[in-house]
Length: 229
Image (cartoon, rainbow, N blue to C red; front, side, top):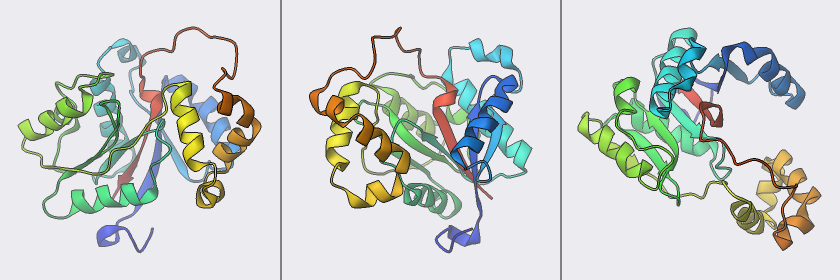
């Protein structure tokens, strides 16, 4: 609960994970970080065989629908990309406010690479339709997502553009932006400790570790979201 939530709604933090059998590992991770009391763990898909489907929209829609069913909520579902560390709670609050009150709109935060890092899905929008016909992992993801919303009659409000962190260059750029930001250092202890440990590496742009195998395509485990009720 927060006095800032619109209409006195409550927000629930949900971590979507896959496969469903990995819940004990995710539970241990949250306990280790000391935040297990703050998050609800929800498998993104009940049927893990569906994880081989290359369509990310199908998985995100399934995750939103499954979370709403499991937690008994049908409020705004705010999907947040975990690779954008610039986002704040105020962004989720904005998505709740726009989705719950007129014009009952979706709220999006685009990313500089053509994707987006936050999408608030209002209660009136059907997830399986909202994420339909979107071109994923592309410079065109944001545009096609807004087109999908418009096609199905869902108005969209667009917030500021943010930078997500996909490469070492992205990480170095972000570190340079927040290195002297006292508010960030107080708010994000884990990122601050990471930057302090690897400061010299980030400043020179050298790899943090030996080259690894190519990164896998974007998967549902890169996402978390907040569900209002």
